[in-house]
Image (cartoon, rainbow, N blue to C red; front, side):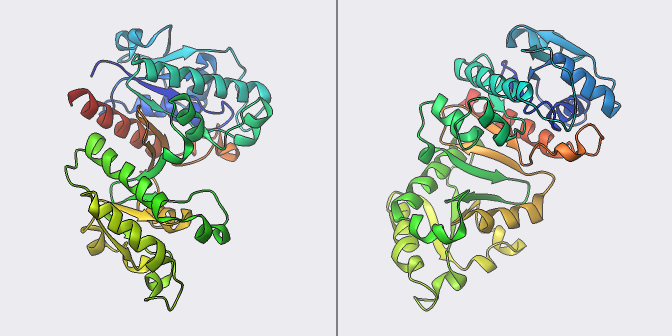
Length: 333
């Protein structure tokens, strides 16, 4: 693999710039592939200084210049000369975050960069500058010609991989949103991605039930027998090693996790609570179903601690490493 990873700066008032510098400072000990920041050289340099990192910044005009300077300096594709004010987001910073996202996505789609790693953004700020998507996932999916329904969020860590079928919706809406076809489609996308990007020839999908005890034969709701079980049957008919619905409360202990490669969950917290309990500092948000590789650290902008040096670099390192590993598998396929 020769093309570097593209890491967006995220909101420049958040922790993204300093974590980019901190990850670069640990590039050798963490075995990170070459990457460059899409954003502002001035912001990254100041963020590194505030964190106490002696990181030189080199400005690049294109990804093919990254290899020349990565060993000695953090490459930055400079889009704007902004003042760095940690913890104080503004419209200029939101505009930079949006420009960085669009630019980096285009570079990865063209093949100039091998994968996209997105820094954390403030959605409310982006909305003020014309961003009309629920989040970065939907933006990237549309840019790639993929419908939002076919862009699947997976959270991956050393101990667990989870996919929530429904994501940012109120819990009371979930039963009406779930269909056998929705579960089948997103689980099939997950299985294909685990084969293509994670090297699993026959991935095992454990499908969680919606209700306690997976409904207990209809005593605690009928969704598991009428919706989830038929979806599992469709997956198995397609040759996918899926099983369930399983009682959600017994799926995530150590012995149970050895029996599957990914847990297909019915709603946001069913997936993310065990994931964050097990792999809080190493969890990576991965978008499946795209023609490109996209990962993201599993945290937000953390404006309250930006510039203080308290933000943990582990998720950024994990996102960069996973993006590099997936890109290498695609390149060798």
